Length: 438
Image: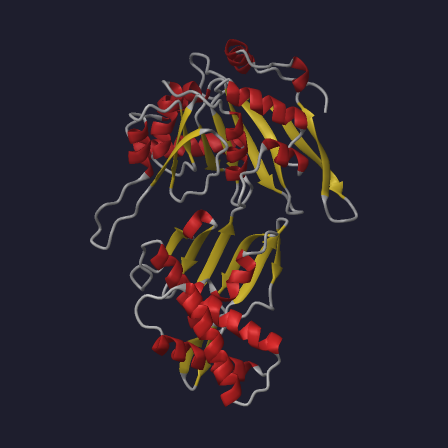
């Protein structure tokens, strides 16, 4: 069966299904109706399709009606971590511009690969899927709301989309997939994300309630690392999380989650990250975890770290640990423009003294690794630069025959005294040998 015939048959089945199903219906009823309509169409059109082809057509139409169309198979593939659908561009047809069929890519093991076998009927097919995702999240998708971010039901994936007029090549969609289980620090160690010594040190740091900033680029594994470190939080501590979209999968026992909200169509009802951080301080948290600091909420987050909520954690988009501190300084400036640079730097140093910046990167081979762990110390009087010392770093050596980056983690020979005091005071393990050797 050629492509044109298949599209025409699917269109006919969809029209018949819309006529047959009125009001509320359950998925079993839909699947049964699809099977009946496909078989009727195959006979009426005298196509003579084999049973596997009929089953494939039924599945394709069922996915369109009940699930996420041709993307459904990718969503069910445990080896895929991201699905990327790009607009196909524009073509002129009899003097009328139309969008071409979108292109699909997936990320496996940190590397992108094209999926030419995943095809949409046309650009409108993808737009219908985007509309469904937005509707399920209680959002609008139209010319006035032409981009958005939403979670799929059940938290299986986070979707970000953009449609015309903001997308000149046609609608586009990204889906970041999440595993069913939160990864532990042991899982990350087994995957080569960090060394066992670094994992043991970070575990003691979290138990000792050292503040932790996880920095890195997009897709570097910041949220995964944050979730893994949460496994070291004692069961008797209450944790509040604050996110734009609920991506965190914490391994702590006592967790309350809060989520920001966008304004409604009348421009009212918006609740931002900063308001939730301020509210969380009144909800008796032992620790506050902000999924990602992007703006003025960094001010409240640092205040929480500095006062009654040591051991709080967050992530920051940054190129390296030094850049993470610079970005924090900028974000605190958003909250209070009257604060001078020296005052902001002093506040950051006081909030993070005895804490850590854990920097993660996605390497060229697609692997995610902790490339640096930096200890932050208190600023001496009169200083203008936040004292910090690198404790561990990853030193790449090259690539092996399989295209994987080789290298080793090195301890830098520095014992962080403030962190040592925190660990000893909390009664958790501190081993001076962590900081020497490889």
